[in-house]
Image (tube, rainbow, N blue to C red; front, side, top):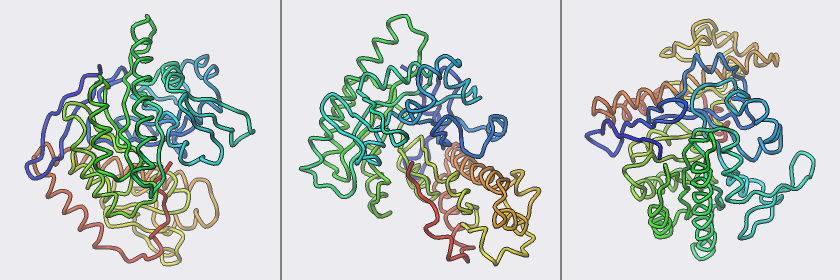
Length: 390
């Protein structure tokens, strides 16, 4: 089991700072994982990713199975070599695609059959095969196969799916234990995924079932699938305490700054989201003073940096006016520059949260951060530009 230690707790909330030891290094939490769905964090080179120093990054098993393929990744030296990244990597199992590609899949007790969105070819993922694939990738943390449900869904309709996800998780764990005990080189961990839509009783049942087994960590799945923000926040506040105190907690696919800060206060350790990189491609920028859309005409002559509190190369060297010009001119450079900034902001937000927890002043940090982001909201077009789901 991967070593995990809580090193500090906040005095006014359930926020905690912890360390998860993996084969490729220690992950200090709370931590945000940049998403490299197809084997690269879009808009970022390997050396720039090293400069940003995320604690851990994420890739997606479903997309990597389609291309470049498991055999090719293994032949090229594993996913770390493919991504030019020596730090920890977590891979999702393909469970989210059960939701997002519902029209292209068939699900039964044995697993899921997908019809590729690339060429129509058929691919079967089972609880055992997704663990095998992730082990062949050489990742530090693998995820079990689960079924991500839509919102809304009635508890009576959700329960059979949740029960199946629990059975799949146990089958995946049995395969992982077999691989780790069979003399293979893989020493990564396996996280289970709590499901149950927004039904507290179903989430509680799922958690109790999963807690009986030696998973390396536990994720909260099935949120950020269209529910209103108040519903999301209530669900996280309910779901997080149901998971073991002694293992890492990972909230899947949630990425707006206010959502991250709320989840940290509930005791969540890990996060991932495509929001920073996807938003950069639409011109949306996240800053400590609120969000802005760089293509807006109001920035055409603005000499200020994107964020006066940011020390990233984009903010140090480029004005809003120049960045707007590059974006409107469709220069690829603009997307790279905005991606660097957005990732810097998200990573810095979590580092600041960790520092505040270590000082036992997280609640103050959260209040100050949220107030500052509200203080400079003068760009109504910024709302709704991003998408927090992979």
